[in-house]
Length: 272
Length: 157
Ligand SMILES: Cc1cc2nc3c(=O)[nH]c(=O)nc-3n(C[C@H](O)[C@H](O)[C@H](O)COP(=O)(O)OP(=O)(O)OC[C@H]3O[C@@H](n4cnc5c(N)ncnc54)[C@H](O)[C@@H]3O)c2cc1C
Ligand code: FES
Ligand code: FES
Image 1 (cartoon, each protein chain N blue to C red):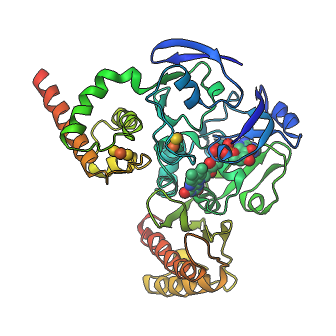
Image 2: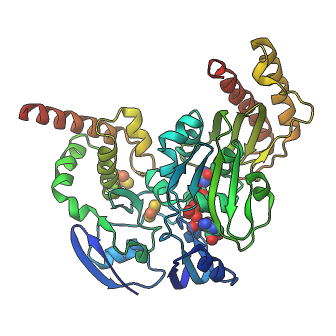
Image 3: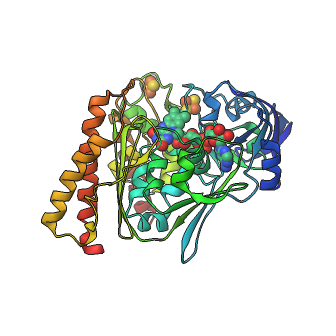
C-alpha cells in the first residue's frame, strides 16, 4: 500500500520543486501507478491546483500540461486531426475510460515505463518536455535520462507536420501491450518507434537510409523500402521475453508491425 | 485533514488521512455500492462520477475530492432501477458483483455519447470487468434500453 504522511497542494511549480528535493517526497500524477507500490511517502506533492491540466494550441505547437488526463488527450479533436488519429489509437486500449480519466500524461511520460503506449506515441512526433530545472529538451533525450527529482511541467508537441500511424499488439484487450509501434513522417524524416520490447520505447535508427526520401517514392519503391526496413528493424531492435511474450515472438512482431504501420502511412499519400 | 465535497447533491465533510482513498471514504459515508474488486486499477467496480466524469475511486485520494461533485450509485437510484430491469430481462446479471461500477459507467457513457453504436459501447465499457459473463447480455440490455428511451422520447413529441 502507498502510505502518505503529508499531503500538500502546492501553489507554484517552484514550491513543488523545493518539496520534491527530499528523497522521501513524491509528486502525484493521477496516482494510478503509484498506488500499486508500497512506498512510504513523507510529502505527497499535488500539482492539481496549478491549471496544468489543459491542452493549449498556438500556430507552432501544442502545449500539454503534465496533469492533463490521458482521456482528455484521447478526445482532443485538434491532436486527433494533427496525428491522423494516431494519438487516440495509442490511448484507447489503456485499461478503460475511468482509468484514463485518472492517469495523467505527466506521470506517463515521467515514468518512462517500458510498456508505455504514451511514450511510444510521443516519440513519433516532434515532442519536447519542459522541466522546471532542466528547461526544454527533446523527449528522446528525456526518455534516455535517469530519473531525477525535477518536475515535468509541460509536454510540447511542435506542429512540424506528421503523417503517423500507431499499432499495438495485445494478448487481450486492455492488457499491457506486447509490442508497440509508431511510424511517422515528421516533415521529411521517416521515424519508427518500437516500445514494450519489453524495454523502453526507442527510435529505430535508419543507419542504412532505407527509408530516406520515403515521401517522394513511387508506390513500388515504397513497398520495397518498407519490406526491407521491416527486416532491418527486426534484426536491429533489441527485444526480450517476459510473462506476456517470448523474445522470438516479439522479434516477429517488430517486423510485422513496422511493415503494417508504414503501409498505413504510405497509404496517406494523397494527404501529403 | 478535514475535507468537504458534494456527495450525491449533499455537502458532506469529514476527517480523512492524507492517504485515505476516496473509495474507503465513500464507504465510511455509507455509500456501500462503491466496492473494491481488484488491487490494480483494472476492474472498474469502484467507478464513481467526479464532476460528471467516471473515475476509479480506488485510485483517487479522498483529499483530492475537496470541493468537487461526487456521484455514486446511491445518488442515481431511479435511473439505476430503470436500467437495472433491462439488465435483469436479458439475464445479464449473474452474481451481480460488477453491477454498481458497470451501471455508473453506462450512465457516464450515455452522457458523453447519447446514441452509441455497439462498437462504441464495447470500447467505453471495456474497463469494467465481469467475472461471470462475456458482456453479451449487458450489451444487449444497453441496446434495448436505448431503444426504449428513444420510443419514450418519440411518444412525448
Ligand atoms: C493496471 C495498469 C495498467 C496500465 N496499462 C498501460 C498500458 O497498457 N499502456 C500504457 O501506456 N500505460 C499503461 N499504464 C500506465 C498508465 O497509463 C500511466 O502511465 C501510469 O499510471 C502513470 O500515470 P499516473 O498519472 O497515474 O502517474 P502516478 O502514478 O501519479 O506517477 C507516476 C510517477 O511519475 C511521477 N510524476 C507524476 N507526475 C509528475 C510530474 N509532473 N513531474 C515529475 N514526476 C511526476 C510520480 O512521482 C511517480 O513516480 C498502466 C498502469 C496501470 C496501473
Ligand atoms: S477497485 Fe478495481 S479498479 Fe478500482
Ligand atoms: S455478474 Fe458476476 S461479476 Fe459480473
